[in-house]
Image (cartoon, rainbow, N blue to C red; front, side, top):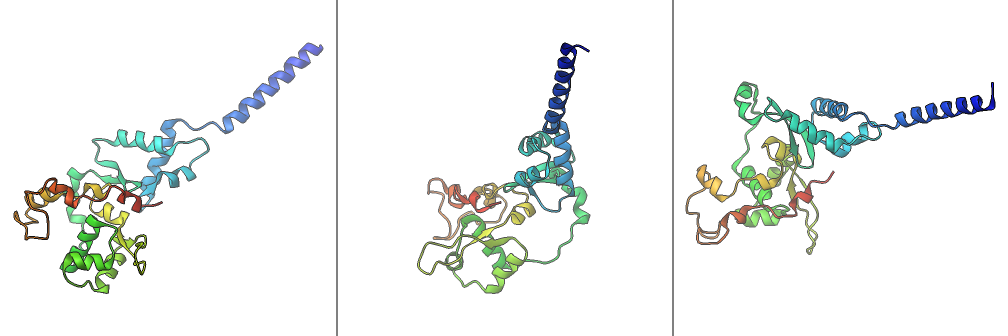
Length: 232
């Protein structure tokens, strides 16, 4: 065997080794990544963040792109890939909820105080207990807040940079998931609440801005930075 033949053989082996090594780090096709994301979302009892899915997927995968592609694929189907805060979940299409009505079980009813407290926090978060009491006009019992936290609809937020550094309360991803919201920006405004009969058409002075006030719907819109409340 000539030296040229030996060199060609060695070169061929090196190329094969390089190709094998490259294949070890080559990301799976996007369709396969979609299947991985789909399996994780289907099996999980809670919404999953893209980072959590990315950590479980092989090297080179892009969980965010796979979720986006899967979400498009599920559009118009019986189940959808929906965003819940900063996470993702597979949920029944909203227009088919009537088919599952018999499966719903009401475990407990919230008191009026709990409903009002939850609404105040949802629209004005982060709120301290004193701020909740100021808006309601009455004191808030510890049991009311404890009940909402046990249901995992409220959680502690950042402490206020005020004397005493009081704790604040914010709504959770569980709250968003239960009410089918992506973020608290999807909460209904004044017009929707009045149209649904949940508010008087002419609220008492001091409770909400009157119709003459410009941008009345903005009064109940959440702050622009409140999405930051939902950390990983």
